[in-house]
Image 1 (tube, rainbow, N blue to C red):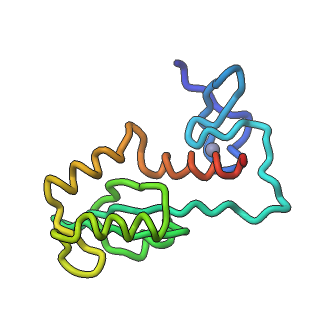
Image 2: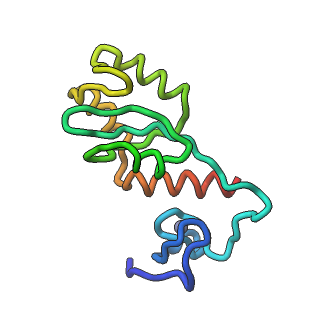
Length: 140
Ligand SMILES: [Zn+2]
């Protein structure tokens, strides 16, 4: 498909690449339909995520309602994945991987944990997935 551009930046994420979905022009990054305006009377949508951050051979499993700000404050090598959900999902993962817990929210990056993270990953960049969750929550 040839690359195309929105007539102006996406109202939600500010990007410019466009694609056609069911005849509609939508933002290729977050999927927001061009021309739709987020409801200005409503507060910005909050999407809680569980993040998997790798630093060397350890992975931090934590949760945030503002992942950009949170991740910029944590030293890491790579964002491995996001999973939709908040404290309950985070706590469940901490229990699930209790055997490889190194301390706090840090876990050894074992094959088992890698397998779990791989299953969460899609072809999309984690930040693109997050942008799409925000767009879909804003539409509701
Ligand atoms: Zn967008």
